[in-house]
Length: 251
Image 1 (tube, one colour):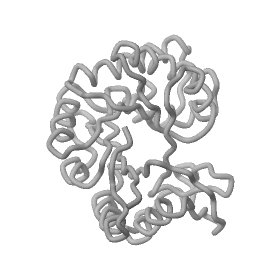
Image 2: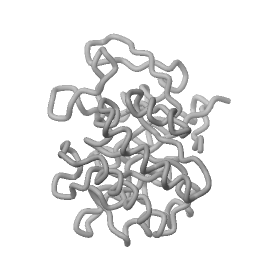
Image 3: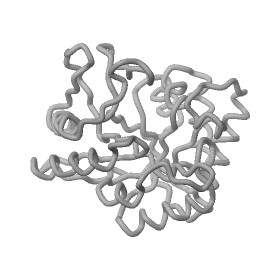
Image 4: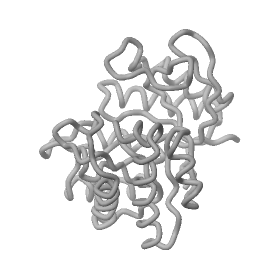
């Protein structure tokens, strides 16, 4: 039986209001990227996410972002590397203080893309994760796409785990279609479920122009705040189960 991880961005409470049906999502995923105060989330939402993770047997990952609650972390902001490092480290510490058995880290939104393309940002974020790893006494894996962060993680001695997106469009070069452009978001549960099976079984994803892209991913991501997130997640889990592909965290 083959296996794949299914991760989702959760705990993204804004002003006390959840942006996703976390209870339903935790029931079908294996890893939760929990917002830890940078773009969303607070102490209460983190504790709630940790409790749900324990109840459903889901691995908890930190989901730090630029310190940008006003913009939900979706726009790149100018910040000195030292300040970015301190911010990411503080966000992860807050999640740990909420009771999380932190298993991995996945940057959020604009920071996710910045560490993929920017050496300074990648170095700052990886340094923060390395600091937290040292305090925990174990190396925290970083989840993301190949790029500058892959090199920085290797240099810091941290594992890097590749993921692929189920509900985002891909360009022919393997990059994601920017939000707001045609084809950026997918919301058809059957289409997304078929993509999950293809990725898990063949390591291939179809780009917006119809070309096929190799995607060697150990984890598949769904965004919990998508309107069709729950129906897509359930369809994905059912499709993977039907193909005898075990959904399990790699951490």
